[in-house]
Amino acid sequence: MKINSSGNGIETKQHLPTIPNKSKKSIQSLSNTKEMTHQINISEAAVYVGTYAKYNDGSIFGKWLNLSDYADKEEFYAACHELHNDEEDPEFMFQDYENIPEGLISECSISDNIFEVIEAFENMEENQKDPFLIWCNNGHRSLSEEDIDDLISAFESDYIGKYDNEEDFASELVEERHDLSDFVKQYFDYEAYARDLFLGDYWSEDGYVFYNS
Image 1 (cartoon, helix red, strand yellow):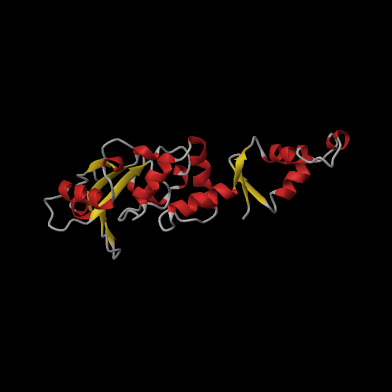
Image 2 (cartoon, rainbow, N blue to C red; image 1 turned 120 degrees about the horizontal axis):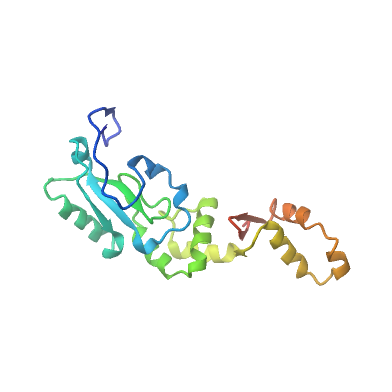
């Protein structure tokens, strides 16, 4: 399939060989990043770098580049240019990627913030990484545009913890109330209370609970 990177058209040309195995994702899956929200190892972030010119000529020649090998975006692009030094002005095509959070990469570009995000993410506690990415996605926060330190600070203010379910969180809140007797608590409607809580001041996903700030 021939790709016109300017977006002016697509014409059928030929089927291309498969990108060397490192990830199961195809070029079309670059837009489907929901599955990458959880369980990523950002220290192993990698991109398969080809060019539009080669792709349109029927070649997916390129290489997997590990982002941890580069200090910043400038170094990364220097490596891309060295890889494709047979082209005078290569237009890089990020044909595949793995272990990169949502919003930091597309088929034709990579975020200016990506190396700052990688550094900050690697320094986070392991049990904070998944809820942080969930919080960013649900709060419509942009890893590619916002200051990473500000994001982490806001996340720490909003994140409460992980629970078996919403009713488990509601039960904890009730147990912390000293104005209710044990007798009252044993008849308490935790399910209804949880439902009310998560319609207002709180939200959750995959067991992680946050303030609805």
